Amino acid sequence: MAKRIVTKIGNIFCVEIDKQYKKFFQYVANDMSMLNSSVIRAFKRKYTIEWKPNMDVIVDDDVEFYAHTILSVGIHNNTWYKAGTHKDVGDTTNIMFRYYSEGNTSHMTKSYRWYIWRINQEHIKIGEMTDEYKHLDIGPVFPYFDIKNKIKTGKYIYHILE
Image (cartoon, rainbow, N blue to C red; front, side, top):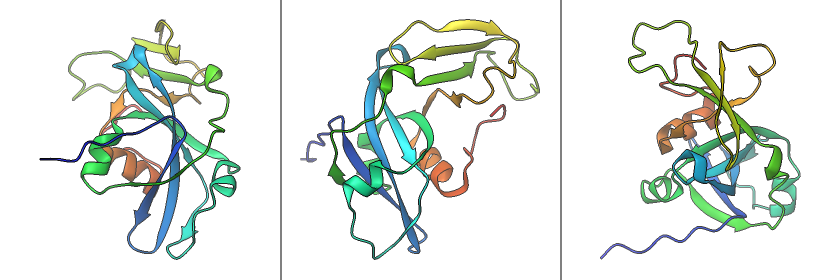
């Protein structure tokens, strides 16, 4: 029988990259407006693989990006593991995301159906993307391997309009 995976807001997870360094992210919220997925904030700093995690140092770092994902799948696939917990999850009331909804996107180069939203709030259609919102993190629920790739390279694997 598989062991039940329990995650809580405030948990900090470690992603080891190529057995050379590690980076961290923190589970900061659930977003009911995006499939009740987990919202994470990934931190910028790289650490040596031997570094012993200090939760205060980790959460004091700058945020590289926010994303939606399913934490238990990443744990189950040994992509990340829990490193600790910290009560400081930052200001979650002002985290905003963007995404587009076009159907078949295989040949699309521009979308006119962009949406923006704050966690647990209604999605607002803005139409064509403007400079005002281009800085927002892209907001669909990403699989564990895409989160790891974004942490490692700064880019998602399968997102054409990022």
